[in-house]
Length: 360
Ligand code: IPM
Ligand code: MG
Image (cartoon, protein in one colour):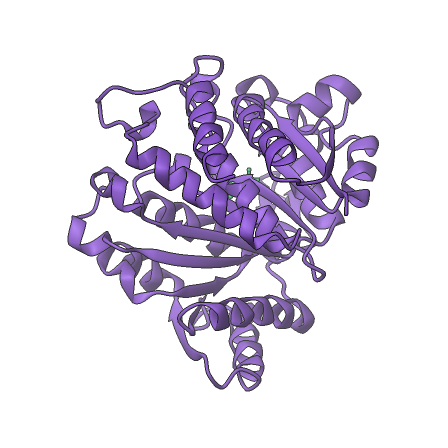
């Protein structure tokens, strides 16, 4: 079976890290009988430069046809002054929304080899393995009305709308419960139900869905407390489910617990398991073209793609193993080297390919 893959490298270090992902894909094709048709398209600032649109029509069409999408990063200072609808971020948000990629999986796990990279004490993070399930196509990111308007007195006012329909909460809750069933069966729903009506309904719906999953232990936490607990005692969490904005914030905190944002992949899935896979770090304009970027988050995103969208769990496991092996061999890009000797983006990609070949 031929898998149709769309590859959107984007901006900043996107193209550099995606190149390393493509090396790994080529190895899967050459040595593991993996059958894929790979097509690239522009997005973000690159889309704007090429077609005057951060999500060119052709790119969206390609993504609609694909079984899965590999995404690099978007954004850069040269695009910051564009009008909002033309900014790179808008391309990403429209893509998420157009394909209804509502379930965003953001794992935060600590590689034992990198334990010293965390800013928290070792005993707090050793063995850390959290999955944040972030709602990705609703909430205040997309709610209407929104804008900046002028009041009668001439003062301006910015406004956004936080809105969640029951079906939106229901489907993200199911997604999170399903994942909890595959893990340690503990789910914490994070909201602000003490203040927000949208959260009140969120909590009610999550509790309703929980009846379908009697084996999962469900808890609820206010977002302010959750942000504190994440840095106080992060290992109390297994799976966290939360809204778009809260998930945006908490997933950055959780990522930093592992000390290595350059290591963390993510998946954004629709109801049928079709997905977009991207490293959670951004476009890092400050290190573009220097060979400093860590390609492992992209390579691990590829592993997630094989597992969640393409039904190739065995190949996914091999990529995970290969990454573990190169870390054991001492390969480190600058972000995880702690001042010790480091290798370049391309050298890291080559090392993973070499480690993968050994598993063939
Ligand atoms: C993320 C990013 C995006 C978001 C930006 C780039 C629009 O921060 O994926 O977490 O806020 O969702
Ligand atoms: Mg973010």
